[in-house]
Image (tube, rainbow, N blue to C red; front, side, top):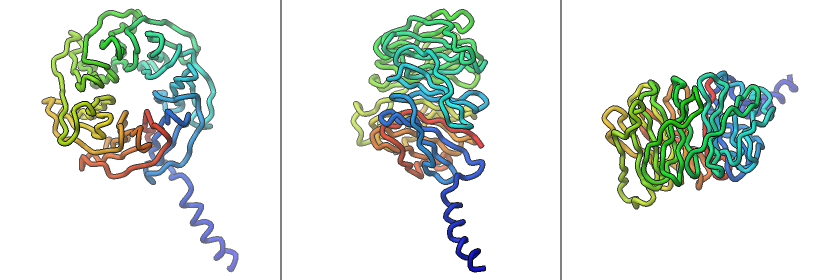
Length: 324
């Protein structure tokens, strides 16, 4: 009986430190630490830190959540991590300085922006074959593939353009001029609308995909914040079509936009230099990476308020959430 009694505190301690079974898990790329932080969203804390390639930025999952793709920008590669073992199992020929990428709905073709080479590289993730390299504008960054799989879109920071690529031919078919230093692009679920953020321009362009024309432009104003600090970067659309959330960089706020009327309804204070975002599975929470403060803010969507700050590595860049 004495032995059982003595073991009780130890068992309790182990229970507190063990990962929560079947919890949603967020993966965060730490640009300055060359690591990925893993956050248990039930406990709202980092449970593990994994070493990866140099300067990890863009991250995304395979469709079945078995693999994690990592843009290791300064290693000039896309790493493939097996999430069951948390080991790097492959490196893909990404082209130089991969920053952002997007996976085609076929779960095989990865569209990668090569910032230093003014190229988009398309790689088959199963065979590691480079299918095409497409010339785009100077300093390509943002990358998205439409949910219907027909169009890939890239942004060039210096050329200030959105580039439209036909995924059936790998040809550049059109360009749309946007405001200065476009960063991120996001398609609506029906593939009909594209949102494109312009960091230095301080705007988000809403573009009709059929015509490739801008039909709405959003400008942001935050009381007490100088306009030069309001720099749109990440954009995240809710599945119900109600909201667009825009990360506003060094303003340390996320804008809440009515996705039907395009009115800005609110601004949510988060950490310093908010960059990218992702929802949890039921979209009750929105996570933001905050580069300067080195943390992740957790926004409660029902309250439109940040409820938690979770310390991660240095300069967190990307975040994605793996469902239960």
